[in-house]
Length: 448
Image 1 (tube, rainbow, N blue to C red):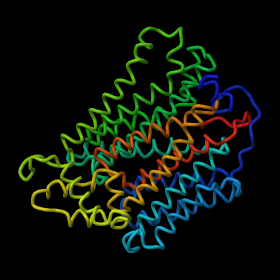
Image 2 (cartoon, rainbow, N blue to C red):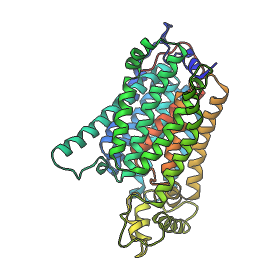
Image 3 (spheres, one colour):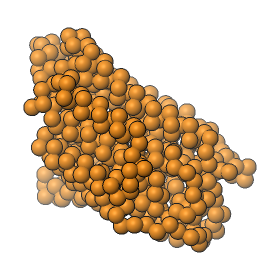
Image 4 (cartoon, one colour):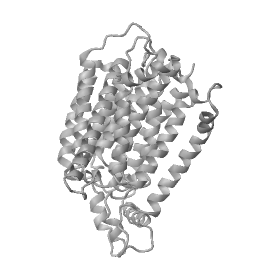
């Protein structure tokens, strides 16, 4: 069974009339409320300030508890319990550092787990996941459209110095968020394209299907790419292009490699993965060799800014290698490690600009190991489902694509410390894990 027919067979967008499971309001209202608060987080500059992060974390945790309560305790997994216990133990034992500084970080971390739980629970009820996905696509489009028209309004008023990236700590954070929106929009479009191919629709019917089922995805894709371009991060554009191309090849390879496809499509299918790898290498090289966060000129020594930050933060980590200096301490450590030689690099926004170094400094080797173990276990479970089950693959492949985008940014130009990004990623990763563990069923709804 190919990818498209597998997704259609379990009701993810099949247009043929089939009995549908009744979708209860209590199954979708809490997740949609969480999506609303997630959009609010984006509007509040990614909830990067401590107070918005605390308030929105509480709201997301409450939405997750309501979602789990509505669905029943059978959807509570061992991983959820272990994760919650570890975060609480991290705080209570003092390993996270002083609560006056670590409280916002702990709240964001716990809220990320809550968003993962929401995605997981929704995926176990396919009709609920379809509705929540539609809500996420449309609210993300509204946010991107708001940012675009705000930028255009500023330009028309004569303020040519204001950019979309001004709402974020750095252009890297802006490009990361809009890159994620680009991937979400493209995944929605690819999903509908695979359905059309599985149903062998006539060309005259394809436009109608695209406008009916993929309109939100297409609008989100266009506005997200536009906002990504306006963010001014060349590295972000190249890295997003790399992941987008690789994901497009992976998600449509089954239908692009069929015998009746034209020679151009077949050649493109062969070249696409190589081009994606080349773009990824180019993007990471750009970030390291031409640091966008540092203004060239006086005060910048010959050593690369990335290497200066790496040396300073690694030295600080070695002072407390096991549990680190505590959550929320990266700014203090950066100020303390600043010298006349590395001042320009250390004053650049984004902290360590490396997610692994950031975790080592704040949580130590123990915290980084626990984090990677949880993320790795999720991806192993998804990979097993991708290889062995005729299950819907849209969310599972999207999760891998987003993980690759975050990884490339995480070693290039961002510490991934924007709460809005963490919550969005956790929601989609939870949905992918839920799809990977759900039993295929023919009585599910169609995507929104």
